[in-house]
Image (cartoon, rainbow, N blue to C red; front, side, top):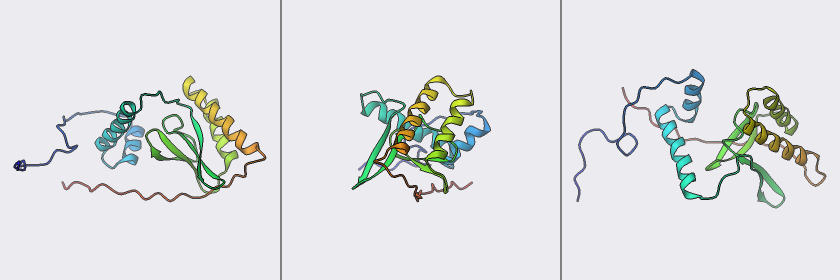
Length: 169
């Protein structure tokens, strides 16, 4: 049996290097929404992206919008989680590598989602690939909203997330 190493265990389960890094306050806030420790948030994002890149040789279409059937006649809208960040009133609930459910804030509907998409397209700060992705999503949302064979209703999604234990000082 191999003896247990003495001292503090490795933070990420492998050798690490201390890195002093200056980031914009909004980026740090976003990272801490993913994990209370920004280092863990960055490592988690890296592992998700590289795992997906190595496990699936097919290119991922950045603007893919799908209806994922639940049961019977009900479906949820699933999008590429990297392509649709920043939509006001919308939460992206991760369901897999680069896949997320669209969850609307209480009281919002598809028309509000369309308006949020329009606002991002028109604000002038969005890069061309993201604008194209937003246009694809807008058209899919519009198609669903206008279709006679769909009835749209919004529901609340409850997400329970396990907290990481905070380190003692």
